[in-house]
Image 1: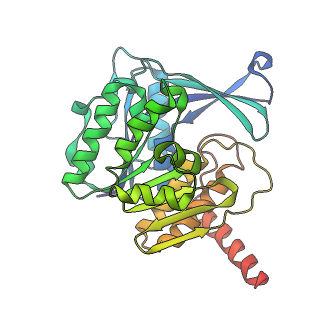
Image 2: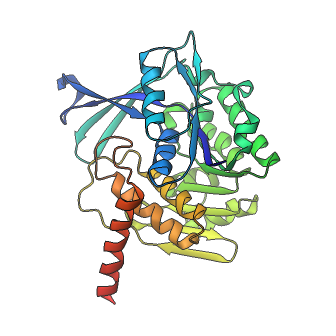
Length: 320
């Protein structure tokens, strides 16, 4: 029995070893990058049982990705290898601290060849939650079909569907296409975790209360709207509220903050700590993520997270 199953493309990330335009950089570090695997690793470090699957190229990068994710305690037993298509790559450009550009080299990658036939229904049914992002359906039409099929299988077995739009406009032909494709998925989900800008794209509204109400109108049970350093708004039935962000003095790399939020939020939710606490934990993990280099390096263990939460609680008590 797994707590969360997620799937999507993970890539080899090449990060420059110093800030500056890539034309002036000559050495890079090899790391792991991928929204869904970030969430799975984050959940595993926090003590949850997580599974992740995808298609990888049968190449050294593909072997590295599976090994790295499995080494974090995530189940990778449903990973498939493609004999013809390569594992995707991407590069980061640290223009300066806190400002990061991302360049993808994932066209016709192995992951973009995923199709509904690759899904193991019993595996999805073994989880309490299916976590998906808006990145996967943007990779190809067959990937979009795979996401739709996974949602149908999850619903058939009473598995909760959690959707993070994680909009990457570079992967769509237009903002309108992104909105149409991802809104369809959001409307079939039980929980939507969206950034405020993403919520605006998907609903056309600008106020967080209106964004949440529009998602509720189509059947979404719980909506969380992330607002970066302002915190996050949540709405679920009669329960609504705003949870302040954790203070961050120094943002090093913002990539992966939303994945960290999802991992923290889902962990707290699975531990039945309540929606307000789940958002608070999500905020805490997201704050930790932006203070380190790399997509998943800043994900905390449960013990590390408790230290941060205790420090914040002590500060709040002093203020009172």
